[in-house]
Image 1 (cartoon, rainbow, N blue to C red):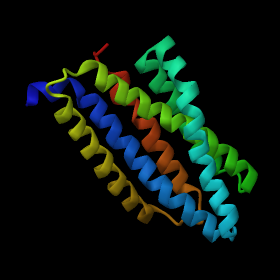
Image 2: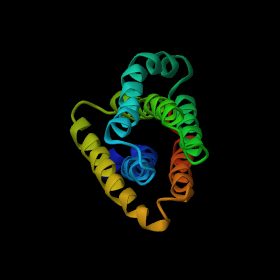
Image 3: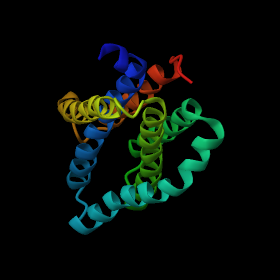
Length: 181
């Protein structure tokens, strides 16, 4: 089993860091919008823009992945996601946050597309279920761990956006250092 999973350690590590960032982000953005006094409708629209971006990303990310490859695409998507998260910490505006969330959605779906297509392409059919099960464990584990980072700072301050950005940019490291094609 270890021989089957060894080629995917970098992707598993990247997924763990990515899921930690997204787990913290999903909880923190809702909390921060509530603290800032946005109505439930405005909060819902801002949060929904992320998923609109995810849908748009399903159409525009594939050509990029196909043309430049997994590693470069992953790096570009992680950089875009990090930039959008950092901007959240600089501006408090419903319109700006909707735009940031939209592009975060595109970047996030791009990251998932890279990891999942990479795993799918490099896994033999007989062991694909095992490889993807570890991927899902990393996803749920990271999401749960990420929410624990809410305790690192005051939700009124931008520090948690920088923690999320740190986790996002860190997920590039294992992918960039992989020997896999």
